[in-house]
Image 1: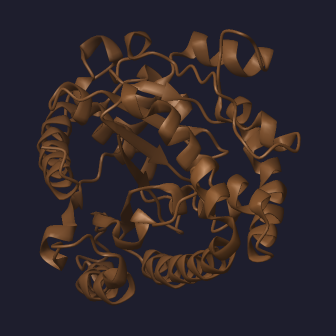
Image 2: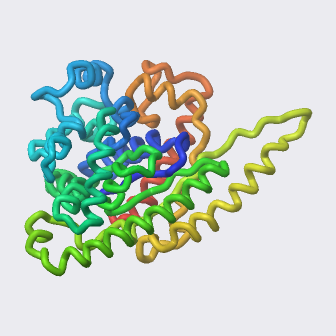
Image 3: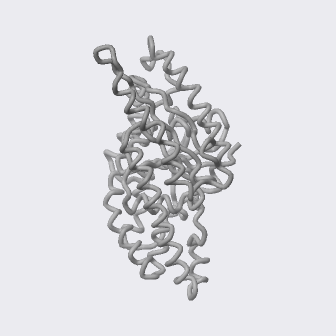
Length: 342
């Protein structure tokens, strides 16, 4: 099972919409077994994919025998253990319009930041428990590997301990960007912080390995971080130009940022490029502005490409949907090629 994390340190770039629609493309067009893992405590992917009734059941009633969320997977760790639960039961694809299985997120994951931060300090102290807890995401991937071809991971914009543990445990990552200066800063932050995390992990693991190889092998602690060469692409959210007194002055500022994006991506993330990836093949595409299609898809709990008249699709939205369908096919196919899924 390949795991792909969608992440940028900048919010509001269409990350959840993109990741879930790409997941649907993999499932419906490429006929892959797809799992969406919602690792954002805001649970945007869960709210988008789950039908309204099921969403209410999961979050209103709290933990139950019929629902698994990421928080229930992490419950043993929150109680002081170093391993995750072993009975993960994702929501099935037959119950949503995205045709994907889903491991729902949970707002309570924010509370686990302290536990994961403590584990990182233990890792730096060369303690076995620190390495095991930090490696909770590879534990989850190993548990579900035989059931899926690909896991699409939706991450929040934080650079905290939760994001660190998921990125270090993922095989690949994609960076959706907006056409603004804060997306540029976000990409630079990713390059700086991911490089620092990888260096720390490898340095402390080397010290720990000398006397603990059996522990590493028995508990499946990562000895090689795939994410080290796991960057497989970026997208840019198109901007809306507005005329004022007949002039589109804002366009100039946006265009200047747009021309900076490839150079910033290459300079900041080049050390993490998947082998053979170029800056041209890393550019997956530019996301068209979707206007009212996003809230419509959210209310229908459906991929944008699957919206129909009974969902409220009408008028100019039909043309916008056609444009987005072409975009998703191109981006999905390019990404599938970059990760070897095709």
